[in-house]
Amino acid sequence: MNTIDRSPSPADPVIVAAGLSKTYPRGREQVRALDGIDFAVGRGEFVAVVGPSGSGKTTLLNLLGCMDTPTGGTLRLAGREISGLSETDRTLLRRRHLGFVFQHFGLVPTLTVAENVALPRLFARRAEDGRVGELLRQVGLWDRRDHRPHQLSGGEMQRAAIARALVNDPSLLLADEPTGNLDSATGESDIGLFRQLNAGGLTIVAVTHNAALSDAAGRRLHLRDGRLA
Ligand SMILES: Nc1ncnc2c1ncn2[C@@H]1O[C@H](COP(=O)(O)OP(=O)(O)O)[C@@H](O)[C@H]1O
Ligand SMILES: [Mg+2]
Image 1 (cartoon, rainbow, N blue to C red):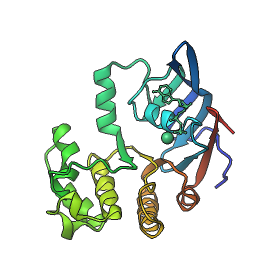
Image 2 (cartoon, rainbow, N blue to C red):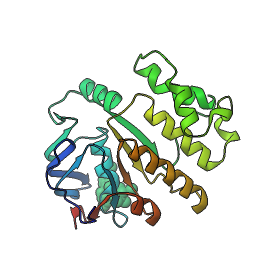
Image 3 (spheres, protein in one colour):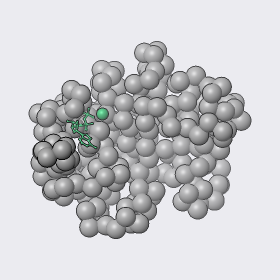
Image 4 (cartoon, protein in one colour):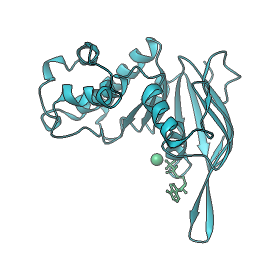
């Protein structure tokens, strides 16, 4: 695949952004964190978002994750224009279609690994039908299922977070610097997991500074000053 950004219109897009913008107020000024970007991500793609600090990567991921709303342009996720949705509908879309992985893992320290992975299923009021166990095996944490996060290594914590992100079978996995807190060897094994998940058909968008992770992606979106380079 090419490494130049803006895909042509994919046949089965999970994301379509047109003129997507986000402006934040800063005192009396406006910061243009995203300045009218156009791109699409097709089902089954693995896209890395790269760019210097302050270029708008996290802002973009927050918009894709429906955790924030654009101030301009349009964004379609899984076939739905998100700017018209109510807060409740955005929450439902997030629950049904999106999985999140963060740099700091975000596991609940008082819950076991298995309970952490099961949590989004509880929120979505879906019965636990064996999916948790299946994912724990897939990420290599079955033997660790009754441990608490502090008993795990960084790489294991991130794999637990990845399993949790997948428990509701999202259409799209979003990751913000998923290897940012891992040493390079551990990062490599988690990159292998992203690769494997993508080979299984999962659509992934990952913000990263890690060359190995962006190499694993099929395509890169380069952000600079809120624009696609
Ligand atoms: N909540 C916010 N309020 C004001 N400015 C923000 C906010 N979030 C981000 N910014 C600004 O928007 C720009 C892009 O930030 P960000 O998306 O975090 O970049 P990156 O993740 O690439 O480092 C930066 O100039 C940053 O200071
Ligand atoms: Mg960031």
